[in-house]
Image 1 (cartoon, rainbow, N blue to C red):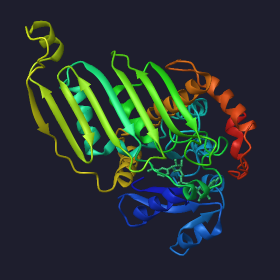
Image 2: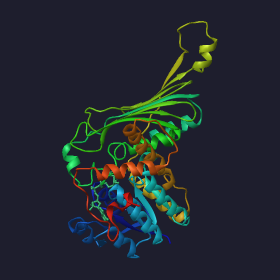
Image 3: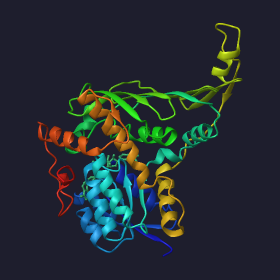
Image 4: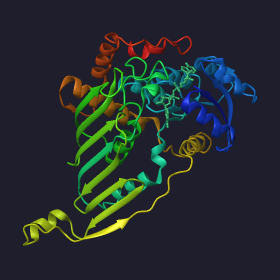
Length: 386
Ligand SMILES: NC(=O)c1ccc[n+]([C@@H]2O[C@H](COP(=O)([O-])OP(=O)(O)OC[C@H]3O[C@@H](n4cnc5c(N)ncnc54)[C@H](O)[C@@H]3O)[C@@H](O)[C@H]2O)c1
């Protein structure tokens, strides 16, 4: 095989973005052959360009028209479609989050483990942004010394009532499985776990529908403890404007801050705790250097991640965001909400079954419109009932 024949499932906000760069030839050796969407109006423009259209993802998967699929549908459909695709012998790129909840994500990963010749990747495009790659390499090289604290304020995910009204699945327990943590901040939770490893303890404080007429969380604060002893604070909101996006990492050798398109390192000339033990002064901190670390944003992160997926299939290149790596963010998003609802601290890694049961309770108690769309022969909401 020298070209990957791709099928795209879901033609909503992100699906159409994927289709545009794929049809523009931005991913060499990848040919978008087929699309699937529930509404014919969505597929018609692609049929006009010679693509084959299917009314649902399962029909596309079973068509034998493609070698791989890109799944860009609502969260609870990711696992059923992903497993069906793997069973049909297809490589899978799945949009974030891997699944609507951790236990379901594990089912997808188990299906992939049984088929090691197939690639399962997650669309976690922040991993290829140069700013995060730079931070990661600084952490890995020990530049910050012993890590003491990470704080990430992520309140620049402003969303309006019109946004939440734009899809029946949005901001419902059944249709989405969570709110700001599982959807918008999931990218940041993925980067946080990629930079730091998963925290070992989590205490969450979330508020459901604090700023919007929705049943899931649109405001969240989490206290985290990491294995190396660093403490963490993560804040997310879709109700603040202007919002803040400030990532601050503090170690004994300095403080790294990413904010407003600037990455700044204030580097201690000496390890702060060593200095503390040896200086005769009661208050003087160690002398510092102030360093700006310039970076460019990636011009086409989704296309680049697809390019990596294609290279993994055709050349055996390592995936930047393998499916396995998508588990940490969904686990953390679930654990923060579970911790808040049960007013308890959650130790990670964590058995997702507890959250699956809690989520089923939230779904059955929901007064919101139920999402009744199906993924074909498989029930849309089956992932919550297994
Ligand atoms: N990586 C990113 O930057 C990014 C950005 C936005 C959304 N997303 C993720 O992409 C997914 C979709 O989000 P969206 O905003 O595009 O949603 P959306 O509601 O705009 O679109 C979803 C599409 O899926 C289709 N669909 C649903 N079930 C289907 C099925 N069984 N077969 C075929 N089509 C089906 C719908 O008809 C709709 O066209 C979500 O998981 C979301 O978290 C990722």
